[in-house]
Image (cartoon, rainbow, N blue to C red):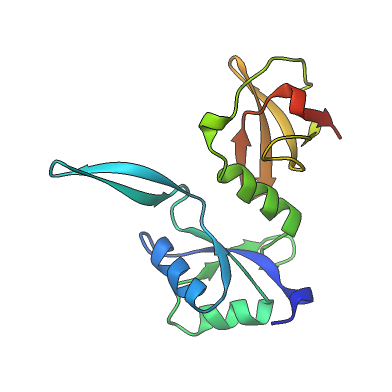
Length: 170
């Protein structure tokens, strides 16, 4: 696979097929990502830890356009690519946006502590320290909290609360 043509594509799959599809794609050496979290479920008095997708039916995969299309056209992978209505082609997520999104979604919320400082709402910021160093996003305010929002095009966004001391305006 040529690395210069490898891109991130957003796709939908059938309900409940996300994790199985990820295993199959990984076995074929196709890089993929599903935003997920580990949760504890109680079934008949037994507690078990299970991985649950944060966004049902959504998967991101990194491949060439030709390889991505061949996976969907083979019929053995339940992939339905999201179309960018402006270009009328497969939605391509830039590497920087995808990297920032992966880092924010996989961040442990317990490890982030809030500090208060004035940041203008809607300002573009860059995180300068910590595990999210280099991530860029926009500032939003919710009641009593300030968050940095990282978006994947116009498809979706993730927010994370970070210490204001580690945020600078871009």
